[in-house]
Image (cartoon, rainbow, N blue to C red; front, top):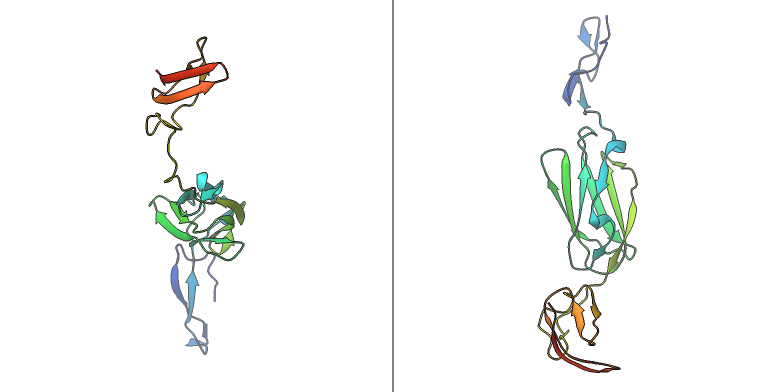
Length: 187
């Protein structure tokens, strides 16, 4: 009686027949699930959602399992207070996954990424979720062009005291210790 020199060539459910004197032993054939080999240490994760997030807004990151074999990907994201983020996993069809999660409250969250039930490198990991900022009540200064705030990323006060920025909006009437500037357009 010989033993097989190597296992099955692919994943699946197999029957194992064990015979003694030409008859099956009790319980034979035995069912044996064979899973494809995988290596969770070859999974990589990247993206801005691993650096931080904002409450109520989706954070995103990518998980690359393309070199790790076939296994189940499991993502868990929960705050220290026990609040769970809403998580959506999109299979890109090439061994990579796009993860979108929406934490509903600010705080420190733990992101757990497992492949085949095993943690992947650098996980679990912590991420800070900042509170959402409501800007609905913010009004530009008198005379400023709506939408102008945040658009000026640099500039200088020229020789005549006029603010010269880089965006091209009206900043309104401003005064300095040297006197009123007046309504100035920024080129």
